[in-house]
Every structure is written in structure tokens, then in C-alpha cells.
Amino acid sequence: MNSKRRSGEPGHRRKFLVIIDDSPECDRAVYYASRRAQNTGGKLLMLYVLAPGDFQHWLGVENIMRAEAQDEARRVLGEFAEKARKWAEVEPEMVIREGNRADEVVNLIDEDADVSILVLAAATGKEGPGPLVSSIATKAAATFPIPITIVPGSLSDEEIQAVS
Image (cartoon, rainbow, N blue to C red):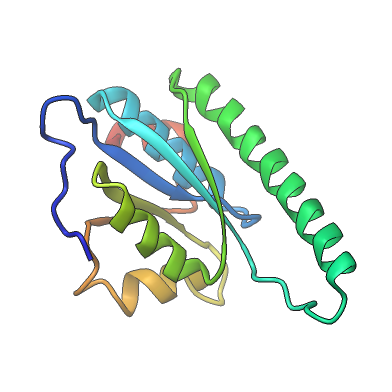
């Protein structure tokens, strides 16, 4: 794993990585990360991870389902990209991967030495902070290659503006 970050070197800019999903709190992470990118001269990197397909016996079906999942990922990323442009006048970089979400997050961080901060948003429900926060921030935090910022899902735009 490449742990050397390059965002402070000439020709590089700090990237704020946000994982895009269908959780209600995802927009809080995008809002915070886009504001931080704008306020610090950084970039916003949005990652959408598709679950791996399991249709090896029906290749035609697998290809159709994979194409539909890619289309949905592009649609969702496009919606969040439009929000980021509106909220902070940043042009996000968008990446779609297929595999285990936590593994793909680490792989992307390892491949892109400008990724400096992972921004997650915590769920507001009784069931806990959400699976992504639970799996990445609590289990791997001590050995994670970059800092993790967890945005409370209950923060308003104004509250996020005050801290970003």
C-alpha cells in the first residue's frame, strides 16, 4: 500500500473522497466535502461502488444487469455532481468501481496519492451510524491510510458551512 500522500507537492491538490450511495445522509457528506474542497482549493472525488455480480451461469443476464447498474451509478453520481456544483462551485471527479466497498475505497486511496481525507456521514437512526461508518471508521480507523472525517447526518447546511 502506498501511504505517501502527494497533495502538498507542486502540481497536486488535496482530494476529499466521498462514497456515494443511496443513504439519506450521503448528501451531508457531499455537502461538507464540496465546501471543504472549495474553501481549501482542493478537489472533490466521488466514488460509487457496485456490488459484484453473481450471475456467472447466465452471462447475458449478468451483462444486462451490470450495464443497468452502471447506468444507475452514473445517474446517481450525476445528481450528486450537480449538487456539488451548486453548493460549492466545484467540478467533482467521479469514479465507479465494482467489488467490496471497503476494499475499493482502500484501493482507490492507494492508487491516487492526492486523496487526503475520506468524508463519511453518520446515519441519524437508532440502528447506529450506518454500515459504511461502522465498517471503515470504527474497525479500520487505527490503520487507515488517511484521516477520516465523519459528518453527523443531522447537521443543517448552515451548521456544515460554519465548520467547513
